[in-house]
Length: 218
Image 1 (tube, one colour):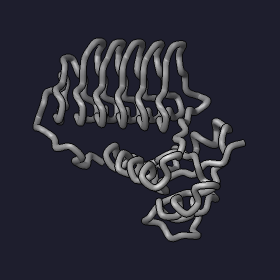
Image 2 (cartoon, helix red, strand yellow):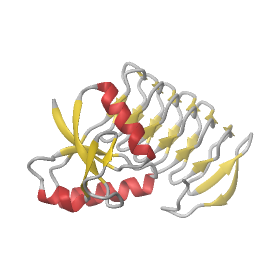
Image 3 (cartoon, helix red, strand yellow):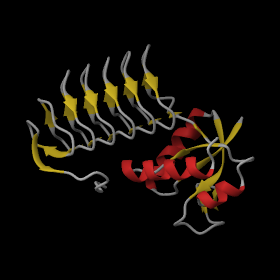
């Protein structure tokens, strides 16, 4: 069984760890997190250090996953890891209770948690997250660093741009497009296209304001 490291030791990382454990494909050697004391333990796994530790241990820690909830912060850590360890391989994590339909694809570093559903011929980019019971139907395209929060869902043929978030329980009807760096608020229903760099919510969802790249949403 291949050894991996998990970058992150917070709440999101705990959910990713559970997904990895349940899938049973990898052995977690330890966690990387610059905000946790080295030598402390999360779910029985030692905190080894940060990306500096990775740079010093390239030969023994060459694969893993970034378990940071915020899309932009996750992207920043991915960039740091690539800088210190260009050969690092990002694994994906798929919970055994999820459903990945025929023809669907999942990018490196992405996660589908318990009860997640990925429809047929749907494409999910790199380092994206489908939380528990999130779903995206057939022929949809999710970009890189996208998040579908718990019980968020899309119809078929939906496009979601890079770094965008569909929040708790929100729905996007079939054929609609969500631009990049956009946040759809919890419980919203998207009935029309939503432009990039927007915050939109309500039923039907309407753009409330613009949003800057990298702006926190958690």
